[in-house]
Length: 448
Image 1 (spheres, rainbow, N blue to C red):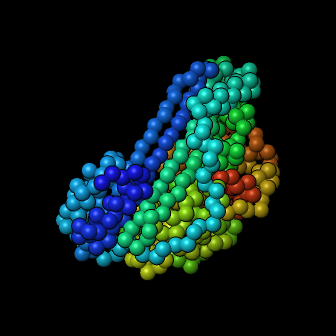
Image 2: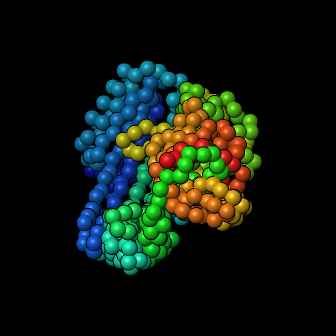
Image 3: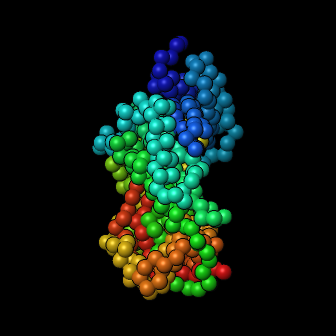
């Protein structure tokens, strides 16, 4: 029979799967469109328009799971998709914890994650944004002669979900982004500086003038950077760098890792593991949040979940399956695409806003390091060891004294989290991982 829409197609798959012997069936579909441009030296270097769509089918039969996906939205493939998925289930090992969520959820409060103006943005609109950002970067200072490019883009995602117990649900989410990487030169020395903003709502996006100027300022500030001698000193992570640190820390709060004892937080529920200044939240219902969703990839309603409250470890984040194994409530963190099964992932994962003024956090130090960027995968959430390359500024007598690069910072996560002695009030949401500035009492700095 002809299928007129993705919603009808997905509903039809579920009906046929149940009629073909699936005890439980779940169907997750996506339709995504992306438009992006990149401008360099005033010329359009990339103009990309793409669209993808797909649907994943999960069936359960005798506690066994089968999963397949397709990118074809044709009625003729439904029977084959269903039969192959059921056949896969018959070959799987039974897992009692894997059952589909069966609690229909009420309509979510207004999340404001869709902007009707975004699908209407044309490539010409995006080129204009990118060119303006680049022009403002170059105009900022005579030492900015070029960029590595400015890029602008928009995306629209339509999600469809249903299972044996939950009727068809759908939502639309949009996003937009604008970034620039400026290059500063002083003689033979060249330094790069980048700034990227990403939002759900186009009107919230930083103006291109600001994006270009910010990238230029970051590049200029790095001129003359060099290592400092190895030492131990207080370290401040600027808010964007702190967000990167938090991203590396996320695995410690993953319920799957907790089951397998692959996190230093295993069996520490209710214990004080960090400074009382530190609270961490995963918030799937944050207004206009980049990770906000009305429900996760397996039909669990999203929510606001504190994982650390004033230094006390509260709970892990879960899919429906890991929650059952822990005998706790699922947290709405079953993140997925149409071509994968749900796994524990972040919605909006952030360190809660503190009360410290970021400038005061610097002025209170006689010496120390102010980190603006890190590189390398140096966070081991199993052993709790931390080591990353870093760049930023040396602090001397309460002020930023000189740019620094070519160094590493290291510590033990247990000691680091307990040693946080200031949390800033400069929280910004430009990623699903966000943080205000944070200050560690003392870390090891490896330099020249």
